[in-house]
Length: 83
Image 1: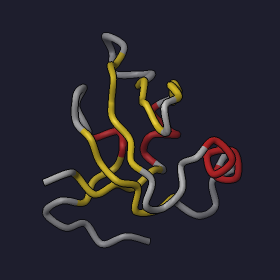
Image 2: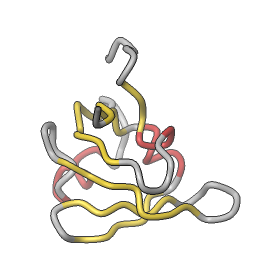
Image 3: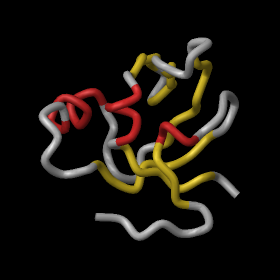
Image 4: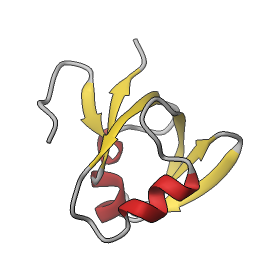
C-alpha cells in the first residue's frame, strides 16, 4: 500500500515522545473500520505516550484521547514522522 520513504513508518516504529501524522491504514485488516471510528484518519496527528516493557501495547494520544493498541494494530497504521 505505502512506499516507505525517509519519514514514512508504521506506528509500531515510533518511540515514546514522537509525534506524527497519519498517512493511511492497511487494507484488509479486520479492525480497520474500528481504527477509523476512533479517529485514526489520514491527516490526523498523534503522539506516542509510552510502550509496555516488551513493546506491546503502545499508548497513543490522538485528538485529546488516549488509546492502547496491540502491535498488530500499530503495524497497520502508516504515519509520516514530524520533521
